Length: 184
Image (cartoon, rainbow, N blue to C red; front, side, top):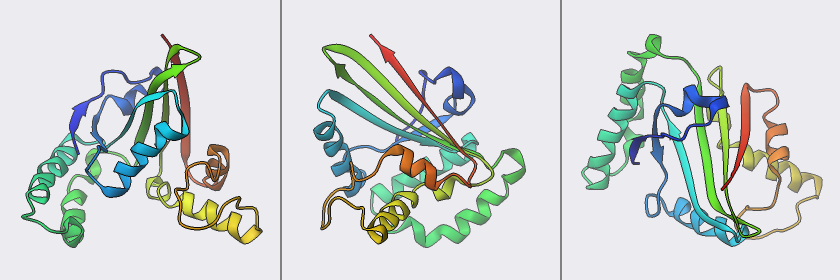
């Protein structure tokens, strides 16, 4: 996790992107490393991909960033073993923030030889953020059950469903997304 303020927040979600963000970087997690490699393979013009997510309260985000160092140094083998204590600590700050969360994916590259930046932003309200990471599995399970999954076996799920299919599975939750495209 790398902490930093995103200076390029999109106008439609400025309040969320003006917060501290954590980047998922190469080598931080095995799955993320391969995902970042697969993205440019699937989308040949992509030169860089940035996944950013952040906690609303800087004190909590900074605290997680501090906790990342003992984990990197292998002083703490599994941070999830401390989840109960961390949850109780975060509850002390509950009244200082909201239950909204946000993330964004920014891709930079070229389309028809022209520089292009695409930023996809997701904002989850009413505490619905934890629904997001499990939704691709739900979409794939439904497609498998319906017999409409185009591929089977051990393979990356990139391209097996559309963004629209994923968002439809999130319809009953307070999830909003925007896509911003910038040429040049």
